[in-house]
Length: 54
Image: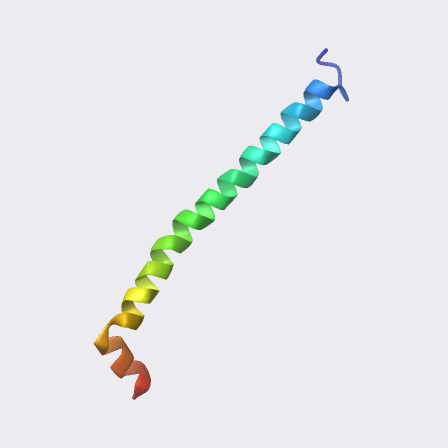
């Protein structure tokens, strides 16, 4: 138990990698959601459409 290369170490590494993946995914989601919402609101606004279409 606790020796390098044991199953416990592999489980710990897998858990840590999984947590890192979820953390990165959550960060991307938290950053992109407001940005996409802002872009959608801008695209829906009349002034933005007038500015783009001119």
